Amino acid sequence: MARGSGRRAGSRGVALLLVLWAVALLAILLGGFLLLARSETLQSRFLLDATRARYAAEAGISRTAYELRRADPLARWVPDGRSYSFEFDGAKVEVEIEDESGKIDINAADEVLLLQFLLASGVEEPKARSLVDAIMDWRDPDDLVRANGAEQPDYEAAGLAYKPTNFGFQMVAELQQVLGMDYDLFERLEPHLTVYSRNPTPNPAYAAPQVLQAMAALTPEAAQQLVERRRQTPAQQLAATPLTLPDGTPLVAGGGGLTYTVRAKATLPNGTWTLLDATIRLGGPPGGRAYSILRWREGSAD
View 1 (cartoon, helix red, strand yellow):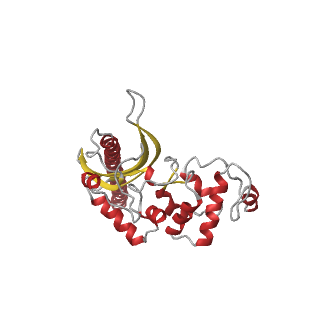
View 2 (cartoon, rainbow, N blue to C red; view 1 turned 135 degrees about the vertical axis):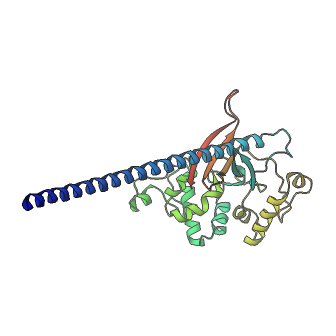
View 3 (tube, rainbow, N blue to C red; view 1 turned 30 degrees about the horizontal axis):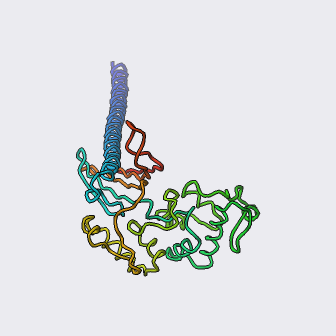
C-alpha cells in the first residue's frame, strides 16, 4: 500500500508540473498576442496620423497656389521666404514661399555673378574660380577648356564615368557632378540656385541674403538685415515705400515669375508632422490643376 501511494503521489506531482508549464506557456503566448496587438494598433495610429499630416501639408501647397493667383496683387502672399500659417483639419500648417526668379539661374548667370555668389557662400577664391570655370565648361556648347575649367579629359583623369553635357543643366542637382563640387558645398548652395527663371540677374525683391551679397556687394550683416526688413514689411507698404539696395534698386514685390518653391509643414496636436518641399509652376490647361509639380521632396516624423 505504501509503495502504491508513493507512485500515485509521484504521478500527481508530474501532472502538476505539466499543468504549471502549460499555464506558463499560455501566459507567454497571450502576452505575445497582446504585445503584437498593441504594436499593430500603434502602427495603425502612426500611419493614420502621418497620412493626415501629409494631406494637410499638401493642402498648404494648394492654398499657396490659390493665394499666389489672387486678382488683387496687394492681397497675394509674398514669395520672398516669409512665413504664413493657418489651421487645416486640426493641423497647424506653416508655409514658406520663394519665387524662383529671386534665385541664381546656373544656366543664365555670368561668371562674375557666379564668382561673387560662391565667395559670399564662404568658398575660398581659388576654388571658387575653378568651380565657376568648370560650371561654364559644363554648360557651354564647345569642348574648349577654360583656364581653371574641366572638359571630358579632366573627368576621365579623375576616374569619373561621365562628362560635361555641353548644353546646360537640366536640374540644380546636376551641379553635384561638376568637377570640384562636393556634397557639403552643394547643400549650402542649392537653396539659392535654380534652372527655371532663365534670367541672368535674380530679382532682388525675392532674393536671399547670399544672393543679395553677390548682386549688390553687401556685407553679410547688411544683406541679412535688409531681407529681414523686407520679410517683415506688408505687401501694401512695400508697394508704397519700397526698400532699396545701395544703388537705389527698389525691392518691390512684383514682376516675379510663375515658378515657386514651397515648403509646407503640417503639425498635428500630438506632434506628428510632415514637411513637403516642392517646386511648382502656376497655370495649366483649362479644367486641370492650378499648378504643375516640377520637383518634390518630403519628410515626416512623430
